[in-house]
Length: 314
Length: 314
Image 1: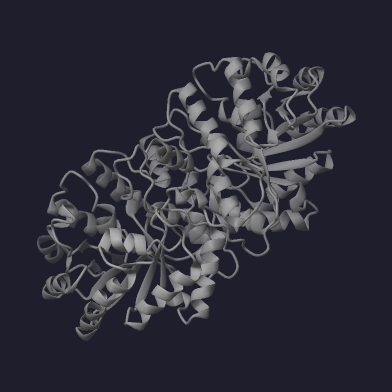
Image 2: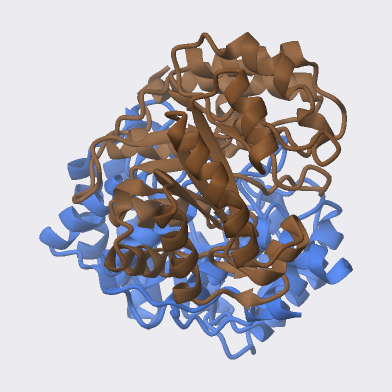
């Protein structure tokens, strides 16, 4: 079938040769699933993602089980996948979470801050600066233990309560996170409202403030269909780490449409077309998402998964 | 509600100040609908699109009624909307169709060619060059009658039988269409496989061949989720005419997912964020697509329509 040769590879000037996909499906993708996903299925999901060529797979979260019941099995899951030859970052909300992660041998941890006061209050019940103060010892102790630290920053482009988020406000929190020792940031467009010019403006401002593209990951949501256009703009600004969720898992699983995370497959399709190496086998990844959709009992919202799996059915 | 101020407007360098959206919902969006849409509903759809600020609305098609039964009411529909203060292009397949369109006072017509032999054979039962020869008198007569002529070109980036389509092959047919008198082209990614570098390469090659961006429209499909990223790349190459379908109507209406035309709302969201004037009122357009979805009995596949209409329900 000739469509197997598609997309045609046509590089675009000024883009990176290689992109690292930070796969968030097992953590961000599953965390809001209502029905409990068995630990063995989660482990198999991580294994299949690794077999598809993903090299960084956010495995789970060591938050309090009452906050995220779906990920309450972190202690059981992590040892099942820890032997895989991939990076397996885990989310920790505080020092207690860090202790749990480190005791299992986690070598990559992630903390999550907010660019807006409203979301800091809603998600962490703290001010932005109180949350940063809470993370400071977590980051310091993680680094002392030799772990790589990623700092997630939510609401970098818009906030459901505050509306537009000024670029300098986001830069200030990013700078605080790198100053306290985060090795990498993930700029979250939590409600999916960003557009490409806004992305470019934030990345330019961050570079000017001493937070250059190599330490930045972008985390776009497809709520308004903008995630891939925003990713393309980020690549044009030198970003080489892109967060995505296999099959587009996560986001708004209870809405009629699942318009959440950027689907890894849609990203890989674009990267393939651009001739940018991600190391991912699109066929194996799509098969993994089709399998996971079967486990969850509903189709993947990824357009690429739907298109490719329909071709296979024909 | 502060999210009404979103997206935040942050222009990006080198983009056009204004984009003309060529709205294809009433024609391309509806043509594959199985259940007959009443003529009065179609007319109301066009009226609401015009009221939402769209200035170019492809109204219908004067193909043989047996080919596209849904648009068999072209003679009845066109007079109902002809008085609107907007451009109302109509599709014509041959001289017979042109006669029907001109007799009703149509002042903008569109012909449709193929960049590949396989699709020319499948869609027109002719070779590429035979199809061009068939359109030559249509274009000449339309122009002699004072009509503006658009040339659609299908399969510009990939073909389901032939796979990747070489850029020079597309350039040759584009040049033939402008040489025969087409005022404007519409580059169709009929199966949705294009990526941004490919888009840029084709536009650069066309400019080099004497077919510059001002005479080019882009027509992307969202089959693999690439449509908006490709549109952004086209804007960066100077394109100022973008085809889109209100609510994302059209494409694959019988598939589980409707992954067809770029949704006009998703496009308008990006243009708003980029500070590019399209003249469209996003709220009125979204309301129109919600209304049309009600007429068709299924939700819009546009992510922006879903996000905005869910906010209104809350």
